[in-house]
Image 1: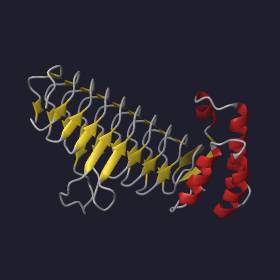
Image 2: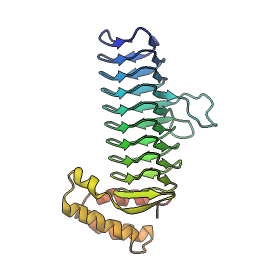
Image 3: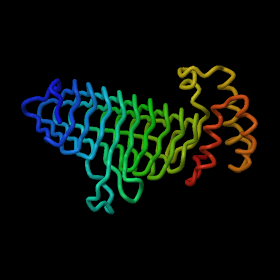
Image 4: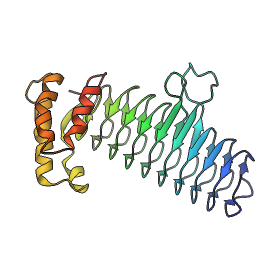
Length: 262
């Protein structure tokens, strides 16, 4: 169903099996396939391809030459019915690619809201991306990657499949991640190593000086005292009462299976 208030360029090809909400704009030469659901006031640039089953929320802005919902690049994929879901208020710049999931995982790739994907970012099959993240040009997520909220990826940074990056982490440009990056941590290098906490990012998000000091203390427990992960978790637990956000770090460490960058 195409809402009567949608603006579809005469050269665009839109399947009658797509759902186009009010206020949507579709630019010239773009292709919207069956089972693509586009939320209100979303703008699709020219020469974009959207393939279903894919669902986009409201007020997303998709620039030119973007591919959304295409079959994944996993050789095990055999045409199964899988999904892509994107939230609200995202900005997806030129030449980005976001692929649907695989049945070997949960069958869905998910991207949250208010994210900025700069030119040529790739979000592979089965990835889960939170809210308010920034991915600079050519950042690349392999399959099954989980990214938290308020994460920044520098240009040309890449992460190994099944990798995880926690909330408020910062990944420097050209970093190569073969292990998990915990919440609050800055990582850089090939392979990436930790370089303190994302202090400036935390300041911008309203963390108090006292909270930042406690998060830095938590970082020292994990990285500077020679503790095992289990020992670090036990030492972090008393800090949670003083700064609840440290629970993010505790949970992340407990759930890590690939190990954290060291």
